[in-house]
Length: 175
Image (tube, rainbow, N blue to C red):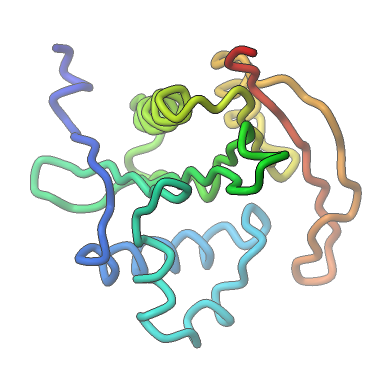
C-alpha cells in the first residue's frame, strides 16, 4: 500500500451521508459552476430529502465517496445504469468531484475504477460520461482510463452569460 492509498478510503455513500454529501456537493457547485449542470442556488433550495433520494442505493444507482483518515468526505462519484430492456447495457458516470486540496492524489482515478468495477459486475458493456470543456486534467484522466470521445455538445451550459461545451465519452467494457 502506498502513502496515497493510506491517505483515503472509498465506500458506498448511504442516506446517512446526505448532510455531508449535500455540503460537499454545494461547495463544488459554487466553486466550479461551469463544470456541473446543476446550479448551486437551485440545489440549495431543495430539501435534504432530495439528496437522500439521490444517495439511495439500488441496482441502478450507486454513489461512492472517498474519505480522509478523519472520515471527512473528500471525493464522490455517481454511477447509474439504465433499467430499460434496450439500454440496460449502458451505465453513466455522474458528478465526479474531488475537494480542491485533495486533487491530483489519485482519488478521482480510484473513484472511477470503483465505478468501472461496479459496472462490470452488473454486466454493463458501455459507460458514458460528459465533461465541460476546457478541462485538461479531466481529459487526461479519462484518456488514461480508456474513455473515447464520441461527441461534442456546443453551448451545453451557460453560466454568467458565458457558453460552455460538453464533450461526451464512452468506455467499452465488452460485448
